[in-house]
Image (cartoon, rainbow, N blue to C red; front, side, top):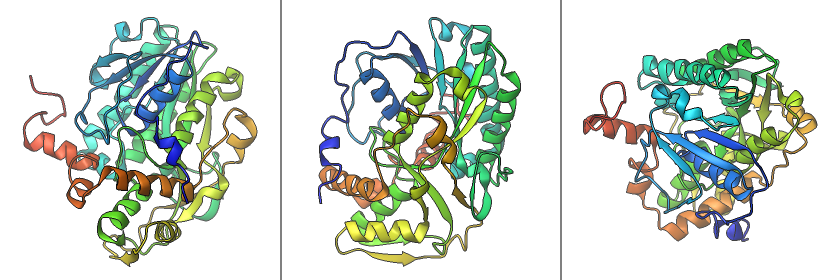
Length: 364
């Protein structure tokens, strides 16, 4: 099977196109896993894009990539100013300490970066007359939801600092909404798939990495928790669909981003990997016990209301893409488990090397 092979050929470079949009978009966290893919998609569709990123993960590319049309601001999200928003028509705010383990590194810092900096950016955007503000939220805020497929109005039950910061940000941004400021909250499923700035600390990417580098698909829980999954390219297309739809459709709305068929228990994800990667076996370590976080998610709202969102991927196709890319890259176990593709490891390395200070600001 060769699903995804052709999609790998141009992933690292933007194919020049005539601009079909006069919109200038600020993407915060553009040098992250989702941001690097979203930036590529926006530029290919002809958007003007300004990236803002503190660049903690420079040197962590899966492969080289270059976006010559991009205007880049190298700055911590906490230091953003009104000047950074000049000539911007819409904001897509991705920048954050970006997963549960990373969020627990320093809970106070997670609050400052993920919540306080978000509110500051939104206020600056509103003052600057920027109406569209698309916020990168997460389905992990559902926390412990059991077997029911939860919709956007389900009570939120965040159990980590990362998820709590997302809930607080949604609440604050929602209160700011009016005729002149229109936030939308994209509650993403767990992303997977190849992007220029790969992450191997996301469940599907991680399972394929274990399978390819060791022959063992390592599951640290008992495999029963539910997780929704979405390919990183489809997630990027959801942001673009929000930019392109009538603003009234998304104004002050939350959308779970994914597909109903892409809800899986971790053990089912592992079985897909086992079918794809030759000669591998599933191994349960039970390091994390039963893992209390479990959430099966309904995507009825996005499928009915956000007509421009049309996912192209499913899990098996994405696992094939990952396996072929890891093989072509020659991914080693040391690289897979090191700093390069594990966000928490990279940040801990920067702290230990005293490259950043205790508040994660770059040292002079």
